[in-house]
Length: 147
Image 1 (cartoon, rainbow, N blue to C red):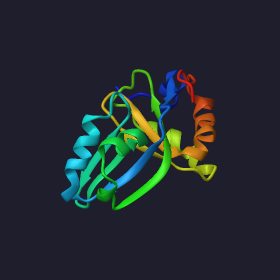
Image 2 (cartoon, rainbow, N blue to C red):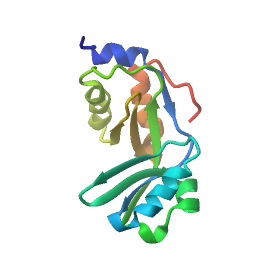
Image 3 (cartoon, one colour):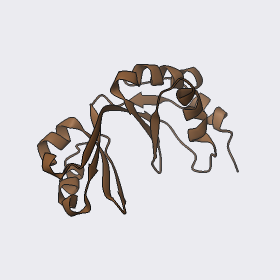
Image 4 (spheres, rainbow, N blue to C red):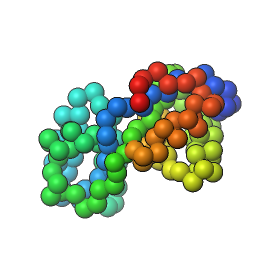
């Protein structure tokens, strides 16, 4: 059964992770730095994509500084903040991310999505997190965690 994305958003609580994050481009030959950061993320948000270019890692600053490797960085973008859904998210809802991103993009901001099995996540520029969160707050159940 398909779910209406707007109805799902209306009931969805949100959270902003308190840490400062970076999107880091790491060549494949430095996978051990990515693995170390992943192993030491300590209940913080972390996401890894492995593709033909190597690894893309969204990781908090403290974890990367302590367990990653600046020498492994090909590129580094940020600082970023991560906003996540914080409630039940049906897997078969279509248009869920589009419904969130259109109003953000209309205002000239970017919130890049990352999908999880039980939650969706958006990373945005740290300087824009309050604005992006305010857009999300207009059509969600609000935020439970402090920004």
